[in-house]
Length: 88
Image (tube, rainbow, N blue to C red; front, side):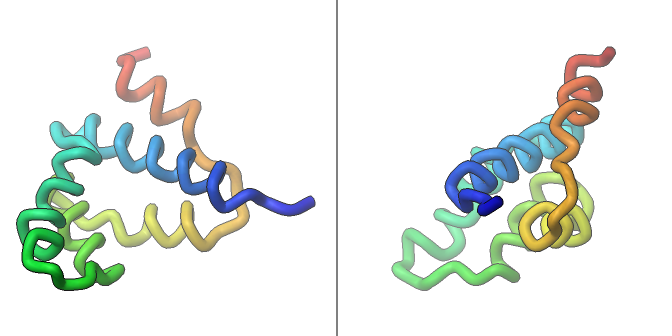
């Protein structure tokens, strides 16, 4: 079947937010960093800019996760990330 990139994008965003929350940040925080650094100046945001904002928010690079979740075909780790953030 065909994968909806809208649905997958929402699920990847959820995975990113859960990963960032486990590290003490949020996806909102990463997006604010992007806006402050680039969007407010009218400069296009690149994939490298996104990776840098996510790394700054997480305290570590999320390149491997981002590549696997966006470009991969495997299942997204929503269940394990939800358990980690919930502490169960």
